[in-house]
Length: 543
Image (cartoon, rainbow, N blue to C red; front, top):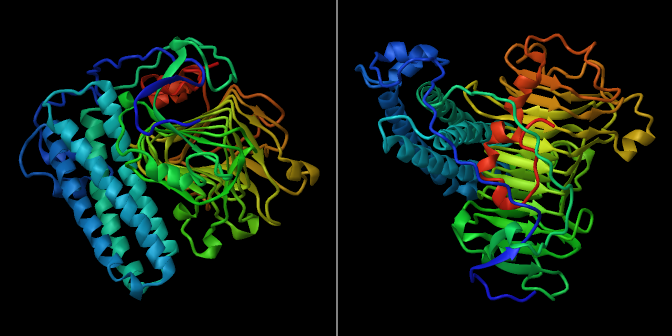
């Protein structure tokens, strides 16, 4: 498939495009108050988690929540730049630091740079107008500010658990925690001033074909492609490895430019692949599950952070993967070992497989969608703090180490104002072959456990086989997060779906259709704005 690199063209690919729905301006606010009315810092800060701290970072004068919000976002941006410089300074003396400390700092360096980008974009958005924003921009800013907090937490987790140099381990967490409080005020004030009340209405079911050939002939089904390159280990394509193809992709494509398509032919690619933020709108297509395989074996036990143990990692917006297996072969004995990590906004995975044991699929941050994928693992094997919907997927708990139990999810929401959570819709949950062969009698499998304080997970319209423990959910540690989490089930089927003997935590709910609609593709991900251009099929509402 020869092609001249970087020449715009159109290809008909993947499935059907759905109509692009234009978001409308919404002017109803969560506290039903006028956000343009001036008030004192003390009054504005009452709705935040730490009113005293909030008051200390706001201007000492009466202002509107819009004015306060702009002020504190700018302050957060300046502080994020300082933190990024601090990490850079530490890394300048990497030769005197341990390998594990350097790896943790490199995570923080990447995450700090992303935070500067998010806060810069957020400030530019809120600073351009003194009135309400269109709902699409509100969603974008709330997503970015949510991701900033997630990035802070990830950096902190890595430093605390992996770094071995005392100067870093004792010095950096304090700055991270202080900055996190400031970023939390940003999100709280933005939510108070800009985020509209969610108005849930009944959503029509949209039917789509389950699988079709990748290349179509109708112009009505065309997806814009900027260029195509081929990866083939036998030398018949443009590149013999995936990383080289990513390096060749143009930087900073926009959605209107089309996708840079990387076709990866059937083979096993032993690579740790990382797609940086500038390689936007890549479309990577393989020859099918268990045909095109990307594999690695990094793990926490071998000195990596969970974050950088990933076989395949992406932070560039607009990424799409189709017909690929992502695998981490470290094995259960190596504990945390990620097959795929996505911190890419509006990322999409269709007909892919994710194979590992503990921490297989790291849905780290931003908005993500998975359709007709297979996910294998044991402990916390779908985890992270993205706003993510997994639709029509197969979930296969595997046989864990002796003494371990399986937990399908471990959602990591740390702040009540984040717009994050894991929604699993129309999934099939069955034991993987190794667990099924063991009889499953000594292995308990749960739907999830709360990794962080406001852990949010919903299972709806899914089939649960008998491997699911009747309690459904498992605690993380004692009573941690049991009253602040949000775990819900709606209209599931199968022998494991009976909620009669489920946990009785304050945060657990059996919900109705109206509540479940909040976690659908259209509402939870605002996906009608960005999914149609991928050509990937989806159901926008309840089934």
